[in-house]
Length: 502
Image 1 (cartoon, one colour):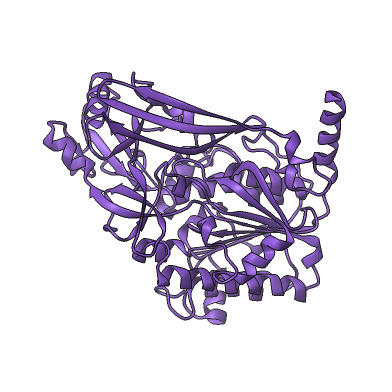
Image 2: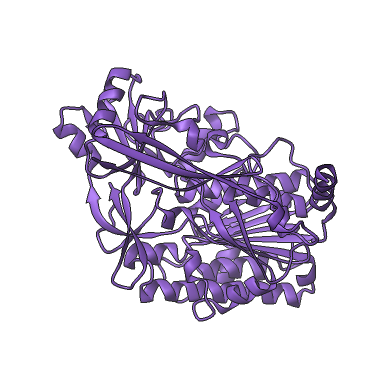
């Protein structure tokens, strides 16, 4: 029986390639509890036509650039080398952290790494390498990471990101056609403009093999006003209207029945209860720590790269005595949640555990504390942040909170079952393997995610597939921390983690 089931499972996983097109849409920051008929009728209807993944996970850190890269590559941050929105990379800037999605960072990164700033191909690159066509359209700078290579012709593929374009020559044409990219959220919104660029221009002749769309909402509104606020719900409505426009265009072009549509979010979102200042607190404790230096930092100096709900600490020269002393400080710091270290300092978790052990990884990563409190709109999940401009009552993420780590995935189309809620664990890591699978493309390297074959037509009953959940804990006299992990088919999903002083 075991042999039969394995063979049947393999048969299911490799026979279904009904889609000729895939449209992958990211709703930045969309929490699954806001997918309702009243908030987003088009997405809600799509869920009824396809599969809703009820236990979907962000990669840690639950940050945009990290998860955008995970979605686009299907590998963990350690392999892609994008481990934060903000990282210290001295070959780009030796005085302070850099934005990993910024054009200058990407160009310097590719120059330094000989084209491998992101160390593996993205979906757009993989589809083109297989002979297909791919376009990217994003209302946020992250879209550049999804498809960053220089090009001179639209024949090499198009990326419209945050109002800019690759190739650059396309920019003037889009401005003439659509007007200037909106300065801020209004009417039209940045999503409206970006979807216009795709359906009116990039899809003007035909729908490509693969289309990647990044919507910057509800993330921005949640940051400004908090999750569940009227402004955040309105931004969900605008994103949903644009989903409706995309689906209508597929109908108009007669390819809806041949198109698999994925709607995913990069992470969830929580409400801020307190702002911390790790760099300031380390300085007060006698460490030479700063977010930015005026001269090149020396061995023993500390660069603090804040990513809102998580913070990265870089000790110049990697002096283990200093790293250990910082860890001891953090275990008494009232805002610390979970502490990870590059060299597996005792009483911490190793960066390798959460797949952050990239060559340029920090010495320490701290996920800040969170709880299950509610905000004034009744939305559950609160966090502490470090080094962010957003204040208590506004929104943030990047922690190991279950409300940051659990996000949205819905998939529908000719390859997927209809009207199903999958209770098996899934993650952003699994999106790229599944997209490539339904398009019949074999990745050139082994991916870290898995094909979500339980959601495909003729798949095995979920009752035959059993995930394993475990918890890693550290218990000390004055400190404890934990990390809950679910493992399924060789892939790890991080459910939540937290810590406290005893």
